Length: 306
Image (cartoon, rainbow, N blue to C red; front, top):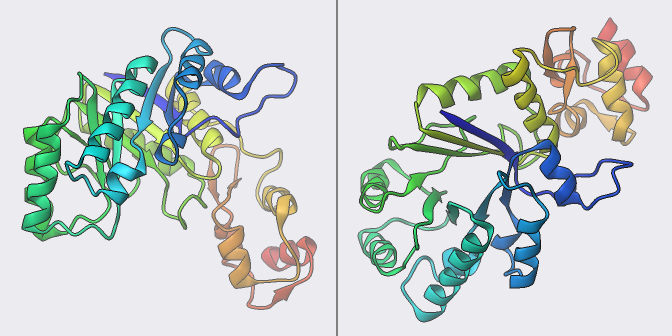
């Protein structure tokens, strides 16, 4: 079983003092990245070639399919969609990427006619050996079977957020984009959640596991899971423990005055060190403070202590 752990992009990955670009620095910490930017724009061939040159031989890319194919043409076999799909396959080829991720929008209804259109698309395109990974955001019980049948017929991997659900079909490849249980990317995983993701992934017994973190703390989440898999324990998040750890994360960017509701929404998703061996969400303590408006961090800590 091969496990690749990475994130959705490298643009915000920085290491002071290394004197190298973000991708080169990222490739020293991780061996896999999902390219998020290709969903929004087509990179030049020269840029794509430079990406491959900046990483080690064993480094792996996966590529997100451009939104014109999925959100504008809705996987219809029209000339522009086919042309753009071929461009995506060429990008995969240049990067030596084995996976092209396809996201279909939540508003897409899988009617009988839509199923026929999508099936026609997958039967028309030439993937040139690239494995398709499909993340349908609008699955309902009534359409599950038809969509899964398409995946089975074209050997497509069902992509899910493993922290929320399991794939609907067994596959030799497990591909998960991990956002967590917050508002879109506003989330950070606790130790127990990362352990659960790892356990679920292994229980599915795929030949290869691809985990791409996408939360606002994705680099830390991915790194922590890598450390756990190597050492059996998780690293600390902060320098302090308990309420002092809470103080540390609240000092980062809390804007005052703020209500309890605001605290839970804006800060509760962050992970703190409850003890040397346990990480929890900041909401663990913030739920304890009374309903009121707070003017500074010290007021919050005082209420949490009492």
